[in-house]
Amino acid sequence: MIDTSRMPVLDVHAHPFVARGEQDAAQFTNTISFGGGSPAYMEQGGIAVDDAVLAELQRNKHDVVYFRYTVHLLAEFLGCEPELEAVIEARNAALREGYTEYVARLYDACGLNAMVVDFGYPQPPISVEQFDAEMPDSLEVVPIYRIEPLIVDLLAERVGWDEFSRRYDEAISHAIEHEGFKGVKSIIAYRTGLDVSPLSRTPDQGRLALDAIHRGTGGNATKKLRDHLLCRALELCMDYDVPMQIHTGMGDYEVNLTECRPALLMDLLRFPTFRACHVLLVHTGYPYHAEAGYMANVLPRVYCDLSEGIPFAGAAARRIVAEVLEMAPLSKVVYGSDGYGAPEINYVGAVLGKRAVAQALQALVDEGMLSQPEATEAARDILSGNARRLYHLDS
Ligand SMILES: [Zn+2]
Image 1 (cartoon, rainbow, N blue to C red):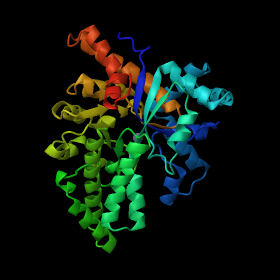
Image 2 (image 1 turned 60 degrees about the horizontal axis):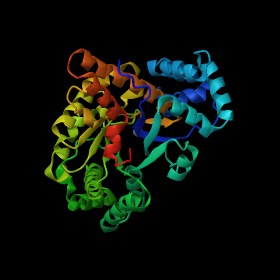
Image 3 (image 1 turned 180 degrees about the vertical axis):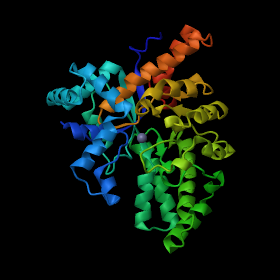
Image 4 (image 1 turned 180 degrees about the horizontal axis):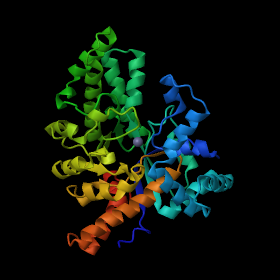
């Protein structure tokens, strides 16, 4: 079996953490779970939240395989019984020794030494400086800039198109030129979907759409505006030679699940104007990840990020890597976790990711498709090397 235990890991898609102190079992469950609902979600549906409903929500989260696996892995790391309460007790004791020190121990244990972080979530944002200061020195924090909060701010100000478009460009340019952001990110899949026409790039589409929004005539105006702004962000990425991350596939319950398939981006990404852009299909569009692998094959600058499926789809980790590698070049698949909330998600992702990458590549060796050295090199590249090259980081 390929030994990934000592290989460094670069997590290409993550978010700053909110839970930096001690938590009880229910809080920690809510922090690290992918879905399962919240009291607010139930209340908005007219459901009175009593103890029975709270217990129902907790049970939804505890019964996901990813969650059970997380408890087992953390128990092993903390040296306690594989039960949630024991893990919480040991975790809180470790945190009392120092948050940064605890994160350092966690990430040291899995080789995680760099993270590309989308600061657009959570909102209100945690600053790059604050997050970086709380992380151990051994972790390189690489910030990327999310366009959607900027769009919300500019819409709220009701400025005309000339000012809107100037300030949009300036904010992204400033983030890259002066604030250390190494790339851009879009979650248009959560808003109006991935079916974006490349013809949306004409500035007149932005002008027309914003005017319709201001006049309240609506229609498809919001989609037209967002589509134009995504095109513009791709152009700015090409100007600055930084990668663009585009959310594809599953997300929380707000994602536009019928409009999130990676294939919907084909028209946009193969359009000659955008071919120069390096684009990461974030989450490989899971559960449509084979589609993303195909796109990384036929579109020279499109990459697959493995996050979210790893770790949240738990048992699917090995299959995701294997199916992406059916078509995607070994040099264009990058490991990520989509960890948020608490540092443990990124730890679980790294442990599971290392195992899945090793298993999937070893199977290719066993089938005579790769040599052992080729597979070992590919594991190193997927876990760290490919993303280092993509983000121009020193190795
Ligand atoms: Zn994310």
